[in-house]
Length: 296
Ligand SMILES: Nc1ncnc2c1ncn2[C@@H]1O[C@H](COP(=O)(O)OP(=O)(O)O)[C@@H](O)[C@H]1O
Ligand SMILES: CC(=O)N[C@@H](CCC(=O)OP(=O)(O)O)C(=O)O
Figure (cartoon, rainbow, N blue to C red):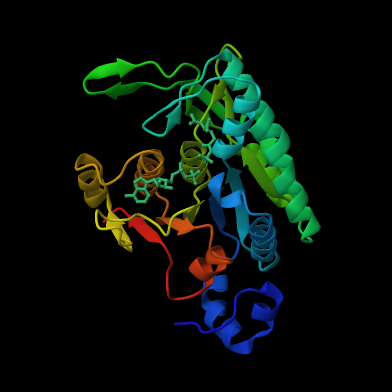
């Protein structure tokens, strides 16, 4: 519905018509938490990365509480290649040995986390980067996977066993945007590689987020003919998974969306991170973007 040019956030904010359109949504989301999963594929373009930082900053400036949980799968892959460490995925999850988990933590909690933090701060926001290890944010246990009736050993892949969101509240109270890398730790101090979608979903559920937004590199969930599916309920997601329409990285993404909406998050959205300002378009306009997942 909106014909406004979204390529410049400041222009967008100055436009009275846009403000009129956005105001009810600003009021709806004011003071509420929005968990934004920023996928590794969505962050490879530096111009889009700047736009993302602008949008996150803007959300905070209008009184919404964004929590960024980031991935970095392609960037981990590049570093593993440089180090001559072989890597493979099963149903969207990286099989992770001791050498791999070291690289995962280095790339996610080091390079990528700090890039995002620096971009938000350069955009005029206040961001602090943490990982799941900080203040016990993400406790993890070894992930269990069964494929074709047989158990699959993914190594040091973790799934959240407990989320302690205290550090998030502390940062928010100080006006700071938390930027979280999905590295967790087990009871014995073992570092676990948690898929960023899974971590974002667990955090969204634990903090009572109003929405979980997943920024990725496709328009949303596509059907077998390649057309965008605008809305999905839990039973439809299960059917699309069973008939193979959904594969690879889309599997943990949709499983997470289901878990989130079943845990009280109002809705989860899979959005095209390649479209400038898709986040603002989704949050502040009536014409939703991507695929909206609800309990149904
Ligand atoms: N039905 C589907 N619709 C859209 N994408 C799908 C579907 N099935 C599998 N995919 C794959 O899932 C990918 C998104 O997952 P992933 O690569 O893990 O993204 P991210 O790095 O953003 O987490 C898409 O690029 C696409 O290749
Ligand atoms: C267990 C597992 O698969 N962990 C992921 C963590 C990063 C991630 O999820 O990044 P994206 O969101 O960019 O895919 C990995 O090692 O690639």
